[in-house]
Amino acid sequence: MPLKPFAPNSGADKKIFLLKPRGFCAGVVRAIDVVKIALDLYGPPVYVRKEIVHNKHVVDELRDAGAIFVEELDEVPFGARAIFSAHGVAPAVRKQAKDRQLDVIDATCPLVTKVHLEAVRFARDGYSIVLIGHKDHDEVIGTLGEVPERSFLVETVEDVDRLELPDPTRVRYLTQTTLSLDETTDIVNRLQQRFPYIEGPPAQDICYATENRQMAVKAVSECMDLLLVVGSQNSSNSKRLVEVGDNFGVRSYLVNDRSNVDAGWLYGIRNVGVTAGASAPEHLVQELIEFLRDFGFHELEEIELVDEDVRFSLPAELTISIR
Image: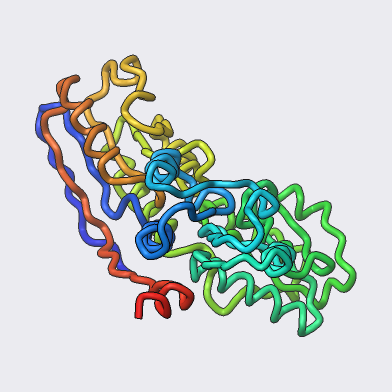
């Protein structure tokens, strides 16, 4: 989708550039709705494996509403109701849920499911799969679990240089959905140099929301002296926004909320950009803006570069119950 034209205001007041799109993506909205609707339909407790999305405030709110967050399914009582997080799970987890006779609601983001299905299809066709991603991220763990015997994880260009594959002529690559576009391009280019026969999925795996938020930071980078990204420390897409800002010469910080802002960061700053990762609630952004106004940032301009209108339907397990 083309970027909308942007002409910065050159006024003298301290200014906030509020980037849009920001905050919740369709997959996050869907996952949060799944937990809320399940609590309304069935009442607490509802067990959620891992954080439903990577944001402390969201998890705390749902916990207060009656959700119980667990690391693994063996913490869930036999036969209870369990929800899989937006990041997806490996087949072994699904088997464990079946063995424990859990009533499962799958909140996996459809864009993550797309990557899982691609891995299965590529493996079925006899290809080795190079997955570009971060090894400890829940999404990557789930994707690798689909076909572990055929999957090879790379995080950096250097990992590609060390990579040895069974048949270099039969190889495909996939990516974690929340990566930096620029970093991923460098890795893909190196993969293509080392393995000329390699191909990727028909459509890129990096999700629309991750791309849009990164493009917004790039588009406004020349106008910002400082970038504040609202998001949790374990949010991959939020951390990538900070990296994009830094790479474009903007001093950038990831803040969980306004309480994480160091007033010293604002010294000598005229223009501050504000955005939010795809799992950060909007009220945290608005609270940050009020905080900045206390430091003289009274002018605000919202810059909308892309109009996001993506919506995902609820999981079949819930729609059946709602009917």
